Amino acid sequence: MHDGRDEDELSRCLCRFVTGQDRMFSAVCWERRWTSPRWFALRIIVDGHFYRLRGERGHCRAAWRREMGEAGELPDRLRAAGL
Image (cartoon, rainbow, N blue to C red; front, side):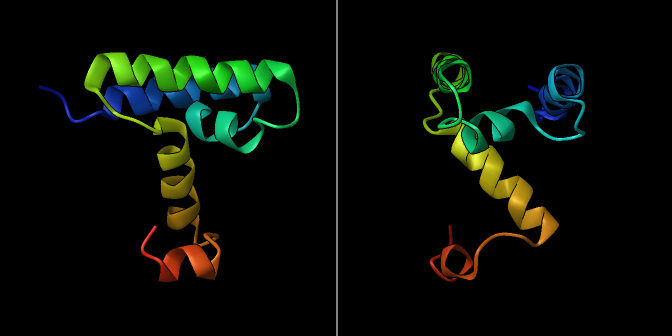
């Protein structure tokens, strides 16, 4: 079984194609979910895919938190809560 690096790279390629940003597509879906119906639907689709594939709930939120944590931008209240 692979460790997810292929999916991370695919996610980054998709995000570069759609938004021009070098970020995780899942994280962008979570971040922009309230900005338009398109992003809201994409977040549901991506989360549903990972739930069916791995049984993982909240994939987009987890990707956003991981990305913000790596960048050191995770709000202090979330970091203190261990999220």
